[in-house]
Figure (cartoon, helix red, strand yellow):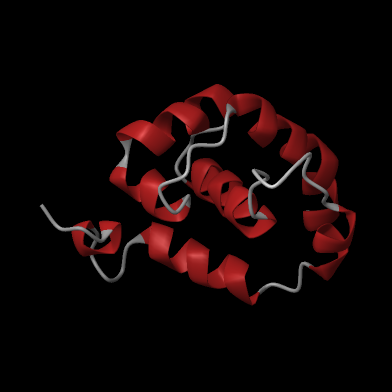
Length: 102
């Protein structure tokens, strides 16, 4: 089995596109307001990319997105093999998604 999750996905896979696009977004306003509780907080770009990829593939539930970070190679790739819990995903969505819709 390949060590790098990217080796499991084709070069033109949607998950790669979303990670690149989110990385290029100016998310300064989110970074300035995002404060994790401690050192275990998740990268806001990763959480946003998870939401975008979930929405693009028809996965809207934060519980299903959390489960997919364990079960789906593409979701694992987007999350960098991290597994934020559904409360973290839901809280991030409620707090920041309205700003991203603009």
